[in-house]
Image 1 (tube, rainbow, N blue to C red):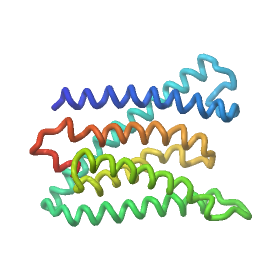
Image 2: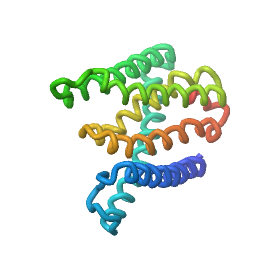
Image 3: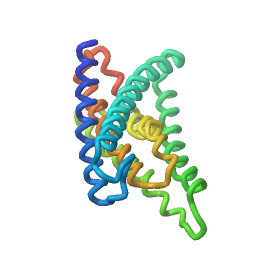
Length: 203
């Protein structure tokens, strides 16, 4: 099991680094003002970029491990009442999407800003979460719907919190895209890494 988890960790890190560099390159091309330290591609800018990308990948891994352990712990408290835990997850999915819209609107909306302008990010995360969930269901079974949605929405938004402190979409996307790709890779690969007796974790 440790060997499988190590495989998941290093592949997630690799995917995160590649996705992060690609995301940075596209954002830098579209917006030359998208910088960390230096407006030129210097060693300081590169080191800041790599540090940020590795941090995002590690955040994804830690979030995934916390999700797995948290699920087992909570189900233990609930004495394996899966229906109760399913209801709790659905509640937090809805709450997370609402807060992602409402809190950002209250914090950043200026005079004349419309609420609809702040619906884009939660809708994007919801659509991507649904797409990954449908993919997961094809790979496993329908019991994976709620846990996958919970992970792809609630855990991803929690991991995304540092970038949500600013109202610049390019910085949010810089963190969001690698996080989504890393999280998707982990949740879609999970069923291949656990034994048949433990596959309830993704269902």
